[in-house]
Amino acid sequence: PQLISGEAEDVAFELREFSDLSSAEIIDMLRKKTGLLLRFAAESGVMVALGVDDHLHPDVKNLGDFAETVGLAFQLQDDVLGMFADEAKLGKPVGSDLRQGKRTYLFAKALELVGDEERMSLLNTLANPNGTAEEMKGVTDLLISSGALSAVEDEIKRYKADADSLLTSYPDSTYTSFLLKWSDFACTRSY
Image 1 (cartoon, rainbow, N blue to C red):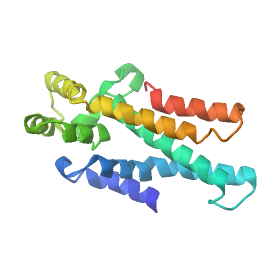
Image 2 (image 1 turned 90 degrees about the horizontal axis):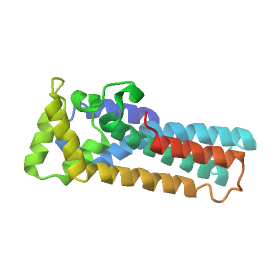
Image 3 (image 1 turned 120 degrees about the vertical axis):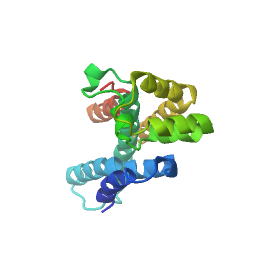
Image 4 (image 1 turned 135 degrees about the vertical axis):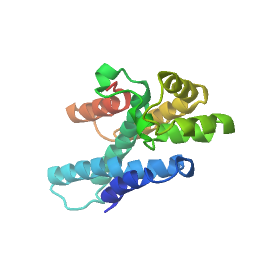
């Protein structure tokens, strides 16, 4: 039910005024939408591998926590890429989240960090499908100068460190190496 509610919240957020959404609400939605999907996949795999039917088993919980945390980092990296990626690598127009008025953590963080004038400018640019290249440049500059981009990148690093620390109780192996590489990819990908 929470996974479905995450998708529903993502759609419902499009109907709310952006200025009424907090970054914490967006993180909660992303946790439900992506984090719990990856948690379910990880927990299911661990239960099958161990032959247990107990989601509270320490390994099931631990690897579920790992996958959920990587999922959050993945989503935040997606927000960053949506504004700063190489379009050819990304496969979609950079700035499409802005033009569509997508309620992203990056935009919410910027709205929390900027002053009133910059806030109004950003709110006026959000969801403007006809936004000019100059307006787009103004938003990317604002995301950088406000510290929003840096804050989100720090959050991604924190999620990655938290996720990776969950693997320290396991011996070095091909499997833990694979999970660490997956975590690294999710947090540093360029597409």
